[in-house]
Image 1 (cartoon, rainbow, N blue to C red):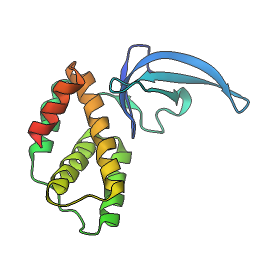
Image 2: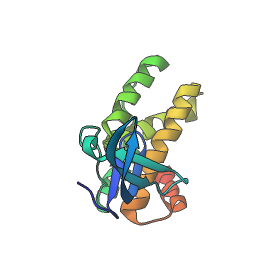
Image 3: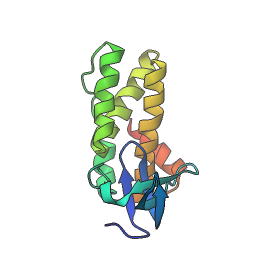
Image 4: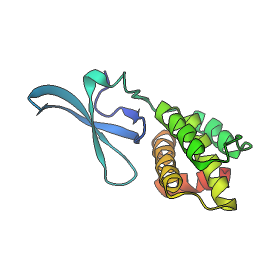
Length: 157
C-alpha cells in the first residue's frame, strides 16, 4: 500500500503524488481510494486501493533512470506499420503497459512520424496523451518544472 506523499504512476494517466487516502461510497460500496495530484495540469485522479496492483500502479522511476528514458527518445525509431489503424493499436498496447520505456517509444515514433507526414486525429491525441504521461513522470522523478522537462524531451527526440 502506498502512503500520502508517495510518487506513483497510474498507467494511461501518468505520474502524481498521493495527496490523501479516503473512503468513498460509490454504487453502494465503501472503498478506499488514493487521491492522486498530477503535476501537469490541474487534475486529480482517484484510484481504488484494492485494485491498484492489478491495474498496474507503480512507483515512479528514479532520477538516474531519466537518462535511460532520454536515450530511448534519442535512439532510432522502431519499425511501425504503414497502416495508421494497425500503428494506432500497437501504440495503444504499449501505452497500456504503463512502462515508461514503451511510452517513450510511442512519443519518439509518433513525433518523428508527425515531422514527415500528417498524423490521424486519433494519433495526434495519442501523442499528446503519451507525451503528458512521459512529462509527468520526468517532472516528478527529476524534481523539475514542466517547461524544463518539455525541453528535455524535445531535445532528446
